[in-house]
Structures are given as structure tokens and as C-alpha cells.
Length: 324
Figure 1: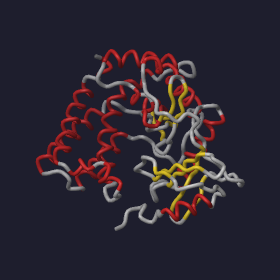
Figure 2 (figure 1 turned 120 degrees about the vertical axis):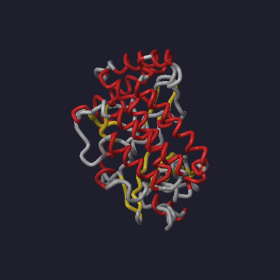
Figure 3 (figure 1 turned 135 degrees about the vertical axis):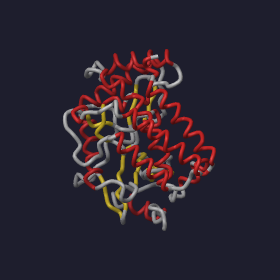
Figure 4 (figure 1 turned 60 degrees about the vertical axis):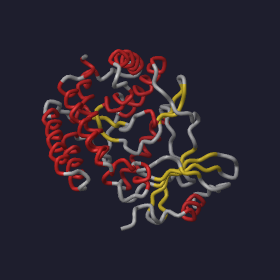
């Protein structure tokens, strides 16, 4: 069976872009993206654009529209994001054969960002402003973050893939059950869920100093606010962790109260992400981009390391590092 992007030829890309009445001055340049296909090109007026081809059958049309509407809402409230370009009829996305594509102007600040004590305060302010807007309404067609069911689904995907030997499968099963037992202690009430970026790590931030632009809302979801905060905190430096968190909190509270009551969710969310990431790689292996980018997945040593990492994470669930 061919992978979802097998028919996305250069000719199709060019004709899809031209159907938007945007005329590339040369061949598009492929950017690092695995779930979708994202390309950079310059038009004949010298303006740079990003075009994103969504992975077929991943999101419904309604879910994609909610992503676009969310970005537009944030942009109108001066939250630094890049809203999708709209054509003369006001449409933000186009269908080309089996693909949904979306076009963006390039972000005004392009350099990758980094987190330091000096940048944490403006970072916190940005997230506070983001959540101040996002808490005003709910997604109707985007997913809700449900850790226990998401981990069970990931467990089933990994075990069905036959990547691990029998010893690894037993060890993996045991550690997943330990994680699930710990999650029982961390109920996330539906009333605490807001619209979140969902994948808020430094790879999805452009900027420097105090100027940031948050990009790639492809995984936006209903989740606790701390989902957009914890990935910015260092994991191997308790003192750095505290200083970063203090500055982020101060900046965040310029816009809205910091969700201190959600701090206990950080290690469960970290566990959830670790488990879901391996399941994602397994489930996308038929896409040629994945074996090229993640060849180590086929190595038995990767699964030994993954199981050890999950065992260490179980210890963090019992004794969270933020309490150290």
C-alpha cells in the first residue's frame, strides 16, 4: 500500500499553489515536517510563503477549520501567531485532489528561539495572552486530551507492530501498567480544559530576545493550560527548573492567573508524551520519510532504552522533580 503522500508530485505542488493565484518564482523548498508536508517558496513579487499539505484522513474538514479560526482569533487579539492567508472569497484552505492545503505568509521573526531565565518572563506573558483568548470558548471538533485512553491506544499500537521481542514486550506491558496506575491519582476535570497549542516546544517557536512567534498549531487540542507550559521547563536541573518556572509564572500572570493547581499534571503529561511519541513513529512507518528520519526505531536497543526511560518516569510520577 502506498503512503499518503506518494501522489504529491512537484507538478501537483506547483499547480496547487498556482490555483491560489500565487505564482512561485522557483521550486519550493521542503521544510522539516513529518506529519504533514510543508514547503517554503518565494512568489514572483519576492514575497516568501509557507504552504502546508495536510496528511490525508488525519483531521476532518471541521477540525482543520477550527484550527484556522483559532489562529485568526488569536491574531486579531495581537497574540503573536501567523494566521493563514485567505483568498478573495475569504477561504483559508483549498482542496487539491485528496489534499487539504493551507498557505501562510512567513513569520516576521524566523530564527529559532531558546529558553533562558531572561526570556522566560516574556514567554510566560505570551502563553498567558494565548490562554486568555483560548479560554473564551471551546473546540467542538478538535480532540480532548485524555491521558489514560491515549496511553492504552499507544500501547496497543506498539504491541501490534511486532517491533519488540517477547522479553521487551513483557517489560513494556509492565511499565505501561505502572504508569496507568499512577494516572488514577491525576483526574483532569473537563472544566479545566481550554484550547491549547498542544505541542508547545521550542521547535515551534520562532524569535529571539523578547520577540516570539508561536507556529504550527496542527496539534491544537482541548487540554489543561499546563500542557503548553511544561515542555519549556528543563528536566535535568531542579534549580534551573524553579527559576524558569518563577519567571514564566510572573509573565503569565500579567494576563491571567497561573494554573498552580495543575502542577501535579506535569509528570503525567510527560509520561503521556513519551509513550505516544513511540506509538506515533510506529504508526507512521509506512511513510518513507519516517525510516529515513528515525532509522534507530528498528534497532532493538531503542526499545530497551525506551522501556528504561519509562521506568525512570514512573519514579518521577511517584516523586515529582518539581517537589525536589
